[in-house]
Length: 177
Image (cartoon, rainbow, N blue to C red; front, side):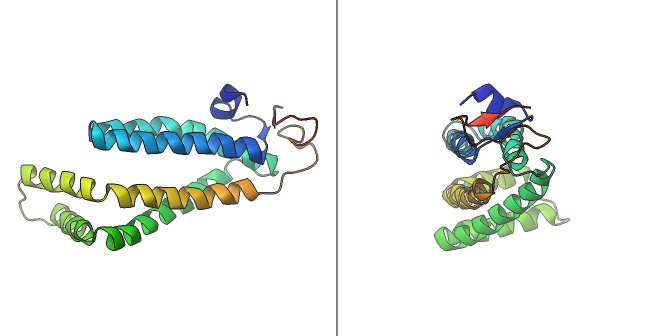
């Protein structure tokens, strides 16, 4: 697998197998950054933003292989985010009900027009973050597995298309235009 092509180029096509390998690597990095954010400092999790473009490249080339536009990734991203939010809320209620109650209270305090002590609000937010870490991570993994499976399952276009030659055949796992 040519990592530079897979993660940093939006051009060309990649096979389902190469997509799966790249997707697992990116998802593993998100998990590692999330755990490090809990252990070291919450700001460490912000490094996940750097994975946006590699995710775009991996999904874009997989969509290209299926004969679709990479712009479809925006719809996939919205669905992914909705699934992640729903899965996280359901898992948070099931796994740590007290975190869900505190999360709701925290959201209400931030929205309300009444004066709130910023230090108290920050302390409560940090506690909610610690209590909801496992449900957040589990929700992410569930939604990532579903989205990854759907993208992996897309039928590859067996003919050359505007994004390059087919990815199957000749032992090549990816193709460039």
